[in-house]
Length: 69
Image (cartoon, rainbow, N blue to C red; front, side, top):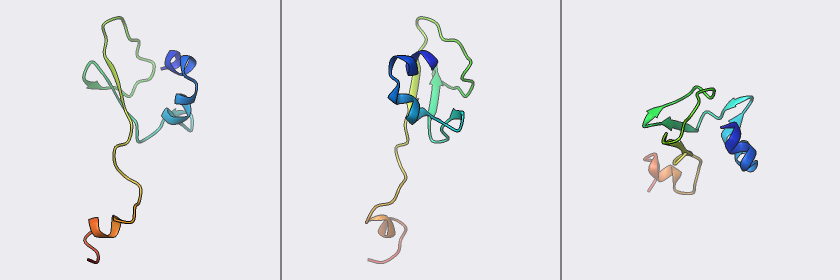
């Protein structure tokens, strides 16, 4: 992760909050959830970073919650 942030500094603001991984970010290493940021990766490993895909508020939010019509 440190190499990734070093190569692409703006991504650090998206991935990390308060000295750790932001709570809405999911990281997998070879298909397994990984929360240990000290884990080493080697050539051939597959690292996937999933940003939040839901949340927030929108004008449709009351309808999605079953309020109003």
